[in-house]
Image 1 (cartoon, rainbow, N blue to C red):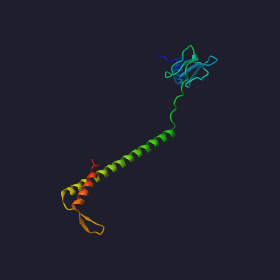
Image 2 (cartoon, helix red, strand yellow):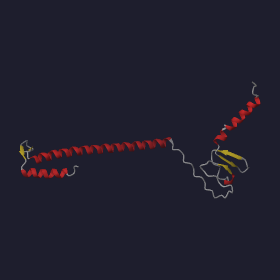
Image 3 (spheres, rainbow, N blue to C red):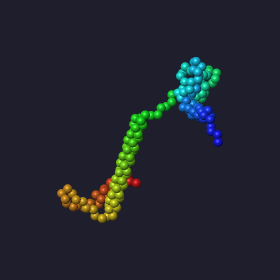
Image 4 (cartoon, rainbow, N blue to C red):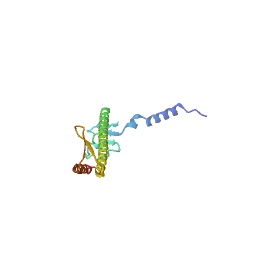
Length: 167
């Protein structure tokens, strides 16, 4: 086998380095400056460069016409990524909102459970009132007294009004 000559290896190295050079990989804009020199950059050309002298730009921004009419709209500045501090502030805000939602949901669940318990007690009391069984109460002196028929009817009426709120 013949050995590759030094000049062939050098030629291949030059071609490969030209293909993979950072200038060609990262260049998104190509334009001619006022001296006619080609400029390569990943940043847009300065506003003083007329649209007709811009040779290449990213596909996201349409190329200006070669006529250079000058009525091309300037590009809006690209939205920059939020800083870490901004991301952290947004995260803390979302976390606080989530905690508030969970707290409200817990309070609502507790209220619903209390309401269900109170409704069940009112139903039990209504069954007792409707049963006709004697109902005794203890007064402030510790003496036991029984409900009269009028008192039972009044208690039943008030309890039914409370049960109307239960579903």
